Length: 111
Length: 114
Figure 1 (spheres, each protein chain N blue to C red):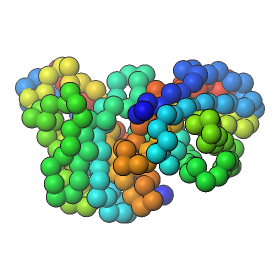
Figure 2 (figure 1 turned 135 degrees about the vertical axis):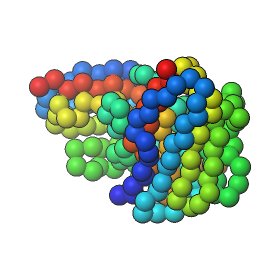
Figure 3 (figure 1 turned 180 degrees about the horizontal axis):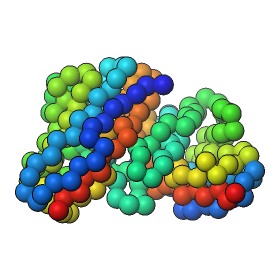
Figure 4 (figure 1 turned 30 degrees about the horizontal axis):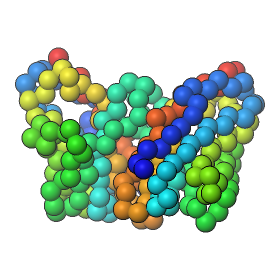
């Protein structure tokens, strides 16, 4: 119930391509789904977040797609750049539950 | 956006000494702060949750006597690693919960115990 699954574990994308990272959860009480970006040796930084009342949220090149019935959400990075190379964590919280993080996806964008 | 300051960013200490890490929310009040530990290429592992003015809640398997947490004010929480040993070497990250349930992270502290 507490687990958040994330895939792929690692991802290599060419510059200008689309990076897609998927997450799935079990706890239907979750009502807040953020994505964090972490560079080596740094703390995670909030990238974008969504609540279940919408199916998609876009901020610049970053888009979250949310499928409530399937209990899945994904991060799309459009026009991926080498500077996007980092580890991305999805997370979920709600229903009195503290944040539960996915295992992370290491993204490498090739120049 | 909200800022969480964590200090120091890196600390090297001898085995047996104690190390204190500070976490401050700079532009908001955080009634709840969290302490995580992260091993290389792994996700964040929640160690404990601290609420201002009360005792911290530790996750299963985390030694409360080794990892002392104090949340003395709405903007400051500290983690003290007591009698540190090489196996305590890790990346420690704090976070603070702001309005709307958002959680903001500090930059992390790299602890190396010799």
